[in-house]
Amino acid sequence: MRGLQRVVVVIIGIIFLLFPLVLLLLRNPKIKTLLTVGKTKISNKYSVESDLSEYTVSMMDTSYLDYMAAKFNLFSPNAVIGSDFYIKKLVDTKRQQINHIKFVLVDHVDAPISMVQLYSGKTATVDCQGDYVLNGSTLVDRVSVNFTSLGKQVLLDKFAWENSFLRCALTTLYYAKGVTNLSESYHELVDIKKDIDNNIYSGIFTWPFRITSSSI
Image (cartoon, rainbow, N blue to C red):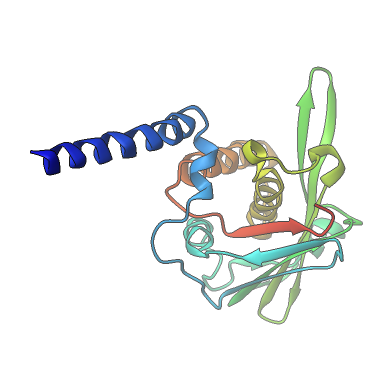
């Protein structure tokens, strides 16, 4: 009988300890992404690096990148168009097939092809900017994140940097397909944000990247 009582006490203790965590997860779904469950996947089709000495970008899991690349058909023959299509307005820019995507965190982008803005009332702040270049069969996706506007990382906003980087990187990849109708593309770009909310913040996919700063 005493043994049963001890088991009941232990179970009640475990529930008592876990309840605050469960409550925290329910109130703040973003925290669920702090918990990595299952085996991670790293594909050699992707790589990441940082040109900034203060910030390091690490590849954590490429499952979501595979999902979005398939959604955009990026690795299909002649799926990607050179950035001159946008920068120099060359409509005859050749298309090509890629087999690798490299994501690079950079300090700034001279001629942004993609941009994400944060709106507060009547003012807008640039969250991130991106461009891309084709280096052989590699698409180099360059993203500049406005770390100043996003501020330092705290627990509940742990992935603000990663969200900014990923959203702009995916927007850049979308443009790499060659966008001719900007009005129709608006809905596609809005869907990128929704997709991150539904598939990563929900915990279905692990964050592809982790950004850390030496100053924190």
